[in-house]
Amino acid sequence: MKTKTIGTRWLYLCVSIIGLMLSLNTQAARPGGEIGADWGDPDGEECIDCHMTENPGLHKEWNDSQHGQNGVNCLDCHKAEKGDKDAFEHKDALISIIVTPKDCAKCHKTEFEEMDGSHHAKAGEILASLDNLLGEVVGGPAAVNAGCRQCHGAEIEIGEDGRPTPGSWPNTGIGRINPDGSKGSCTACHGRHAFSRAQARTPDTCGKCHVGPDHPQIEVYNESKHGIIYRANVDKMNMGSDKWVAGIDYSAAPTCATCHMSASPDQPKTHNVGERISWTLRPPISKKINLIKLENGDEFDVPEGQPIPKVGEAAKGSKVVKVLTWKDRRAKMEGVCYACHEKSVVDGHYAQFDGVVHLYNEKFAKPIAAIMSELKASGYISKAPFDDKIEWVWWEIWHHEGRRARHGASMSGPDYTWWHGIYEVAKHTYFEFIPELKDAVRKKDGNEDFANAMLDKHFKPHAGHDWFFNGMSKEAIDKVRKGFEDRYGKDSLK
Image (cartoon, rainbow, N blue to C red; front, side):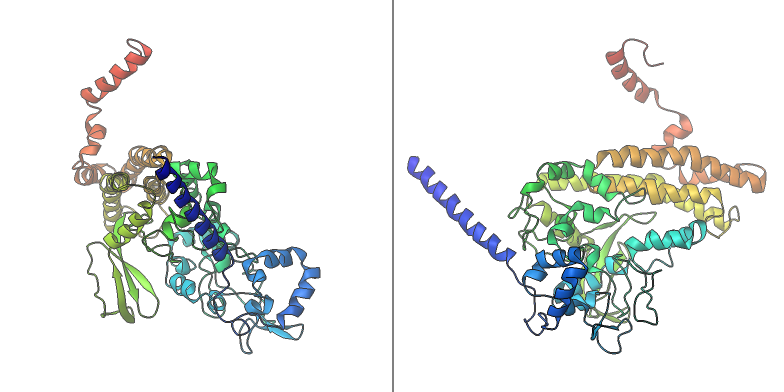
């Protein structure tokens, strides 16, 4: 027994030493490419000497970074070519202020390609959205510029002097549209000039944009068991590791990056944050989504139930090179979960998550969406958005409360699933949407017949609405009464 114990300890010691050596080696990993060709421009030394005095904070961030320690200098990233729209002469060098994903791709080709076709890269294309209509018209362009576009990104405008205009710069929105045609901003997650891996892996980085009434992922994460454990063990997370494999380099808790981007024992890391998502939780009605990847680097989702193109077929001006069904995408996410959880936990989580999405879809979203469609078709409300109060009520039910419920369930946030989610969906359905429905019909017809017909057609078939039409059942009330009186005394529930 003693010999076995000593042998086991030696094994643990050897593994620990090897792990430490691997860790030190990955910390010293150099950028991709060839020194002197892809990076390490000798002319950049003059930039460094000047900025050391002119911008000491900027210089220190760069110097302490992996870039700085491996000889990647200012010109390697900021050097421009003659004819570039955003090029201007500075200290006898042609440079650009904006460092785009295409610039980063000189050394980080894989990361660029993974990001380039993703939903993040398309985030700046918000012109055709109802969110943007609210911002531009109801709010105002200045609010959109300093608000929406700072997360989504915007098209960077270049002045005659080759510099970005103040109205469009600074902007590190994740879907920024750059002068060279590329989309995205690596510094949205890897803040310049440190370009820290650790920063990109913290929940707070994602929480800059994934926050607030319509997509409170950071709030949900913070209240979840994952978030609580992360805060208690942040010093054990090994955030600066190059490989950062869940269950191997760290095991205390996952961050947003763990689940959506980082490596697990059975799959590599990716900069495509949507690849492991099997439900879309953004629209009024959630659907499972299949991912179609194209030869030109672009990709798009196909909702469950719609025809899925096959590999080799033409699609959207290119050719399909890969298809990930919603089941494939879920399996990828489950693969991350298995690094720290056994199967019953993972299966149980998805059963609970799916249950909330189905409840929201079937009981609330589909009936209300159908009624809104019939109201417009029958002329009870206009076809223009946001000029009838009932549209604002429906907007907040799905865009705010419904999203909160679904995201809460997806990330194990109980308060956001219920009190900030389904509770408010239900409250505003019964006591705002339905009264507004009847009011809209009454204004046109002088009676509520059409409204009542809509409720009979779309609400009554779902058993979950029975309490609204027929009152709470005696059985349900007596069950609550018994527990209430056991706690607070006889006749305490009036």
